Amino acid sequence: MSRNFEHEGKTFEIREAVFDDRYAVKVFLDGKQVSPEYSASIEVGQDYFSHHKTRIVKELSLVAENDVRNGIYVKT
Image (cartoon, rainbow, N blue to C red; front, side, top):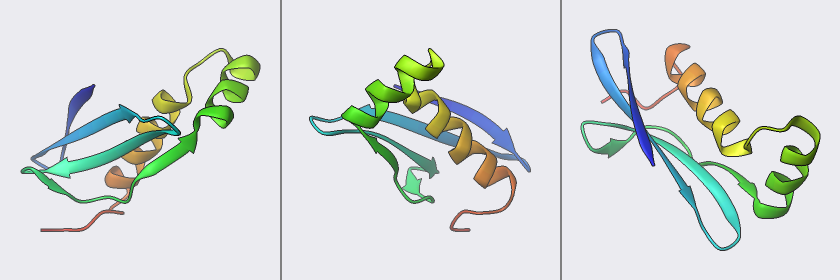
């Protein structure tokens, strides 16, 4: 799954993925990765959901977006 957001006239794409062992989120600009991988194990994701009733990948996505908005990304 992916979604876009605008920041300082640029369109960033946040890509979410679920792998066998983890949830992962990365940010892209013009098709190039500009962030680290934000991730959590499946086990942590399940624990997080049981306590907060929200998916951890959604929270990881918000952290990734906030980092970009705070200038924490590889500027190309």
